[in-house]
Length: 104
Image (cartoon, rainbow, N blue to C red):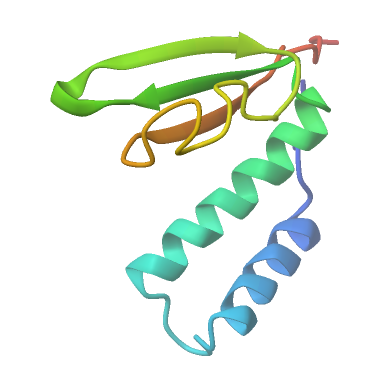
């Protein structure tokens, strides 16, 4: 695997876009840096892995309890907040990727 995942120009384009969106011309605040890293990570995952193979959904409840579901789509499968579960619970979702890039 000798070619880079993203070219220098692609990385610079993402950096410039992130700085411009956050009005950071000469400096990068910690919040902007996190957004920059997330944008780069998204671009790398898209280039290497393509679409998510599945999704991990976690419902965070009181006392540190959690309930986890694996699904094929990004939709919240726990139901409607306030009807199917407490509005105080928080649901987070994360894409799961299958690494398919092969070495030459």
